[in-house]
Length: 334
Image (cartoon, rainbow, N blue to C red; front, side, top):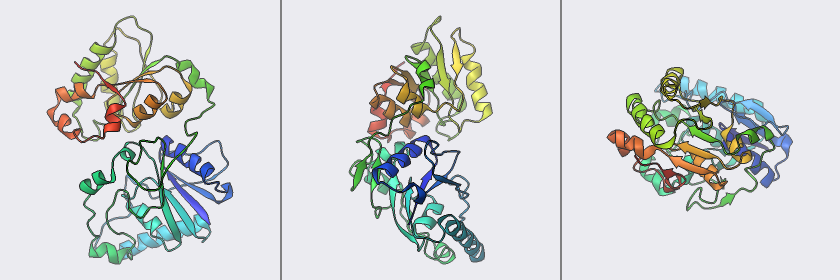
């Protein structure tokens, strides 16, 4: 039996590592399907690049059944190669991706469980029932993918277990396992950030939640309310999804202030930093990192209400944000 873990972020890496220890899974039977460069570096495990990423969907919805059959056959050859033709069990982040459905509905898959990936895990199942239609697949999907693409769920109700990083994750879900010792790191390099102040940017512009000009207006208000001249360095870190032109616009605004703003490199792993550094003060729009940082005793502030005051469209889009994410940070009001 092989155990397949889909990991695409540092939090799923931590979750997978904790599940392997919790379930006492033999390391030689673990296969890490890695995306976005994620990986478990301190344990000798087999890593395989998942060549069927979520973002660019290689499992198309098409009426060309020959194309579907080709994709399905290629996918099954990939699974057969990495598992050696053995039966396998899956640990996934969610069930929305069509490639995940091909995997968990594979005839050799014995079941699946769900790992906490981030903010989505703090919503109720009712939230997903309302948000996602769960429509039946088209005739062409059923025929082309041989009944392996089924109803549309974010979290399918036939999972075995959900694995949570914090007790608040997966509210109301059955068979919840709260993992222990997830947040532990011996990377002492991050000690230099003790008592640091860090702004964490996210992908709300590139995702279309707010336009660039509104964001920059809100950011200026946030800076005026939060920082003064002659302070110690204020660090900031971009989200990996933020493109170069977006980063430049934000950096240009920050450079206009008589404040020592210092950009942290993308290689800085915030999930590790908050484990090691003490007494951080962190500023977010909204980020799952704030849930974990708050749990670890750091001060967390949010400038989302400032942005909502600038953009009515953005304010409407965040109305249904889950309570745990909102409560993890103190709002800065301007």
